[in-house]
Image (cartoon, rainbow, N blue to C red; front, top):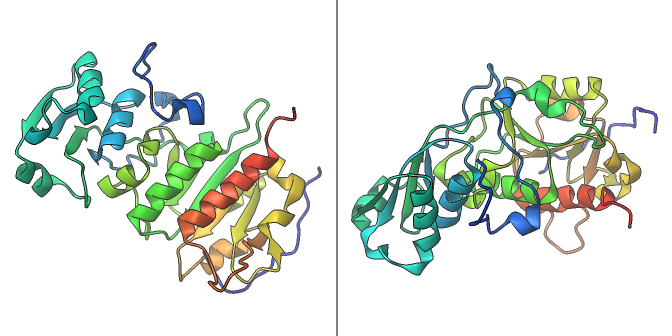
Length: 296
């Protein structure tokens, strides 16, 4: 399909490598893990944070991914010998990661998420990847990107990352300012998906969207009041596409909305006017994935 310029429709903004077991509990659902090779690091983007990881699933995936160094793991002393953390202990031992059993009060005082589940890890920072790598064409696969505009709630970002992993998104683009990056709550809410989905940080999202358009990627924003619906994009879903989601309430910023090729809405059939941004992202990414399913 030749690239065209559909009308922009405005409105109210809305919103490594281990050869044998143990395996990630999510491996059967998400397929092969995307590696985090050093060639993809961005000299300009730097690190995303994520030096402290909390929660059993997030720590488990941190160990399994082997994308970055894990310095030590803290486990609440009352969980020593508990089956619920046995696989974490086994994976850590196999990778020579020290485990320290500490008092529950000590662990909870150090935690920065609401419920660390008695497990906390200290690791090297999660590396951001290069923006050019994210938008580069891949043989046999059109780019599938999600850009996040002004989302500051860590629970929402974590859920977005988890959905992106499940739907096969190639990369997530975050603005450097006025946005949350990787915190313990983000890592926990993502259930460890931050270890697998490449994330890049850009100094200006509008300029990044322009560069994607110049690279032949369709940029599709979401707005409650848009005339077009997500389900109307059709075959565009099989081309290079970037979905742009905005913070709840504020929605897409003006400059970001102006850089979109089209603005679509998610139809709401009940009385509530919109979805949570992470729920909207889940629905939108899986709609793209549905179109991209291999024909049987």
